[in-house]
Amino acid sequence: MDRKLSKSLGSGVKAGGVLAALPFAGALFMQGWMAFRGEADGSLLDRLFFSNSVVLIRSFWITLVLFAIGLVGGFSLEFTRAGSKWIKYLAVTIQLVICTAAVALVISLTTMKEEGWAKGLLLALFLGCCLGYLTIFVSSWVVYGNADGFFKSISRSDKAKLNDFESLMKALRNEDADVRERAAKKLGDLGDERAVASLIPLLKDEEWLVRSAAVISLGKIGNSEVVDHLVSSLEDKDEDVRKSAVEALKCLGGQEAERALQRYSADIQTR
Image 1 (spheres, one colour):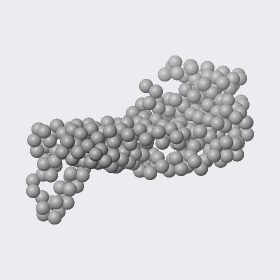
Image 2 (cartoon, one colour; image 1 turned 90 degrees about the vertical axis):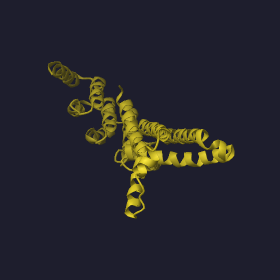
Image 3 (cartoon, one colour; image 1 turned 120 degrees about the vertical axis):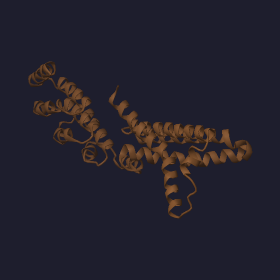
Image 4 (spheres, helix red, strand yellow; image 1 turned 180 degrees about the vertical axis):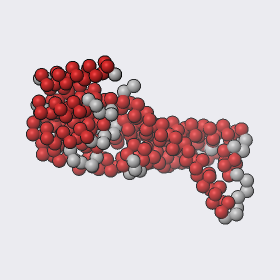
């Protein structure tokens, strides 16, 4: 499976698990609070989720829906992480629509008839937006490491104007990995050899996407002096970076690069 796809799926599963666990965590918190105040009357968790078969089935479907929403949220934020801000906005919009539709479906199956369609739709819109933003924050925490990482990423992308050589060189030091990756790719497309010295340190970047972009660009604009650096990337812990290093050495050409590829192929065969 493609690395980006598998990583996106993993983020989706994590976000879905967190979102699906929230109702149970909330019930446990309320149970503890009621017990602390001496108001506990039986298990709140049992009454909310396991009191009878109907409630159990309903709880199962709610948990499944929350997991599915979190799965879509985490997957989309991870998959579009390196995209433009408009792609990210589209992913968020899709999440909000899905959440609103899911809440509307639940309400239509429960209280829509009693409350009326107009009130039910307004309630679905409100709760859907609340659930949508909750999903975004949970997914952002999974993908970016903090709840507002998604919004900070868009803000940093706006501030990073990658439209000339100097701004691209400055963007290589940006704290956002997406910006560093885009800058490294564009420098390779520009073909300006002045960028070589600044791209080499990115081969040790903590994000594999950045390392891979730097490797590819060095293969485009580098010279024989970068061969040793690309050879070191053949031993990178990430498979995609290693593949990029092979392609970069092929693109670079020359006797040194060819000998390095031959040694690498021989090592692979003997492992």
